[in-house]
Structures are given as structure tokens and as C-alpha cells.
Amino acid sequence: MNTFQLLWLQFLILLKKNLYVQKRNLLITILQVFIPLLFGFLLFIVSVQDKYDTEGYNKATFELRNGVTEGLPPMALCETRWWGDACTSGLAIVHNSDEASAEATATVAKIVAKIIAQVAPADVDRLNITYFKEGQDFNDELVRLPTSILAALHFATNFTLDEPTYTVQFNETRACEYGAVFCNTPWRDVQLPIQMAMDKAIIEEQTGKEATIDMTFAQFPHPDQPNLQRDAARDNSVNFILIGVLGNFIVQCVQLVQEKELKLKLILRMMGTRDTAMWFSWWCVATPERRPRPAARRPCPHPRALLPPHPARRRRCAGSSSS
Image (cartoon, rainbow, N blue to C red; front, side):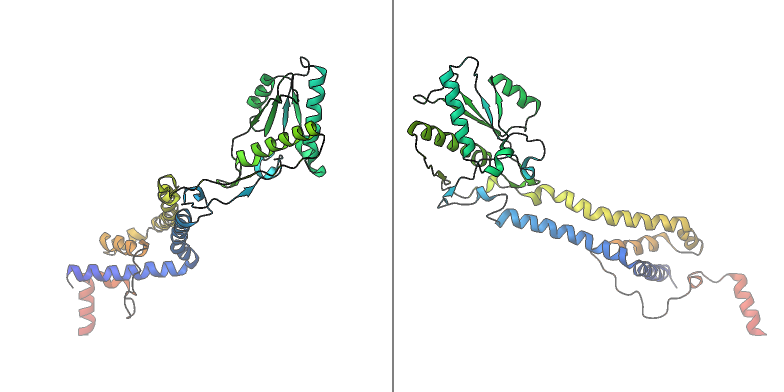
């Protein structure tokens, strides 16, 4: 038997041994195969969703020929699913009643009462209106607790119905339920409902009659904007591949350490096994892209068969045969 035949025989035997080890640890083997496939499939799903889902994250970047008319939601409240426990007030009223006239103070109070009347009775407590006398006090509060207030109405000091002057200030930070999906739109969900409620209250106070304001909005038509689209698959492909491969790497390291502790490699080397056969058999089993075939259909020879016959053993065998 020449060197190549001996190396090939050793490789087949070690490969069969590695396959038996993989078969004995069937659950770990299945995880080694399917974890990379799972992360690859997730990467594919994210890529397809970003590229073709017109209602997904890249919704605003797809071509739009006819904008859909949408109505405004009710006034924004502090909801846990959006802002968690940080939000404590849905509306702040900023008016310096100390310097304002009694008429202006009364008018502001009536406007605020009409705004509260537009909120469902069960949600009035959740609106939790807070009052500030100076705009600087309001700004200091926002610096201290940035997401504690959703919107604010700043009334002029001498606010009158003849020349109603006010300013709407709102939190432009998007709030999302899960990561970067299911997010609100601050100008639509916070600013416009407050402004519409304010305008309605002013009209009702001026006319003395109940008023109805129906405000709708629609997007401008626009072409496809692929340069603005998110490509999560391209941005996170390295992370997905790393996570998928890292599990297999850890398992293979554990198996190598176990063989090192059992001194299997040292024993095989003492029996004449070459390092090339050992590492190549490991590579064939550990490489996911290649699935080795059964090593041989004949019974596996004993490892002692890999050793060349010892001279003393040959003499004993010869002596026993002659006798």
C-alpha cells in the first residue's frame, strides 16, 4: 500500500467516525444545518419586504399617482403602546394669566373648556392638561422630561376672539410599537388634531353655535424613489451571516476541545494516522456546503490495520505458521 492509498484509507475511516459522531448528536447536527438556513431565510424575507411591500417601511418611496384622501384621527392621548410611561400630559396650555386682562383669561378658559368637550368623557383624565404661565417654564419642563408632553397651545397674553393669536407646538419624535415599524406620524396624529380642535373651539365661541370641521389630507403624486429606500438586507447581511455561522463555529470548537481532552488525535497519531487525513475529514463534515457520501459499504477496518506490520510481529506470525 503506497502513501496515497494509506492516506485515502485513513481519511475514509475518520470521515465515517465523524459522521457517526454527528449522527449520535442528532439534535446538534440538525441545528448546525438549519440555523444558517433560518437566518438566510429571514434575510431573504426582509429583503423582499423592503423591495416589494408597498405598505411596509418604504411605503413613501414607491410611485404614487393618485393620493388617497384620509381623515384625521382624534386628539392624541398618552398611550402606553406609543410613548410608554414617559408621557404624562397630552396637552399643555401656556398663557400668562397674571399679565393678561380678565376678559382674555376668561376667553382662554372658555376655549380650553370647548377643547376638552371634544374629547370622549372616558379619555378626559388621560388628556391630563397641564398649565404654564411662561413659555420658558414650558421649555424647561421639556428639557427636563423630553417626551412628557405631546403638544402645547401658546395663547397670546391678551387673547381675543376678534384677533385670535395662538401657536401650536408639538413633539415631532416618532413613536413606534416595535422597533422601527408601526410608528405614528407626529404632524398627522398630534399637531393637526390639536389645531383642528382649537379652530373649532374658536368658531363655536365666536358664533355661539356648534360647529363641525372635517379636515382631510392626501399625498402629492410622486415617482419611484429607490435612492431613498431602506435596504435592510444589504445593511445587515454581515450580521445575519455572522450569527448563522457563529453557532456552527462554537459547536465545532466544543467538539475539537472534547477530542483534545480525550487525546484522540494523539492516539491516532501514535497509530500512524496522518494530520492531513484528520483535518480533511473534519473539513468535509463541518463544511455546510458539502454533504459527504457514505465512506464505504464494506465493514470499517480496525485502526491497527492502518499500521505497517512490526518486524517482531512478522517473525511470530511466520513462526506460528511454520509450526
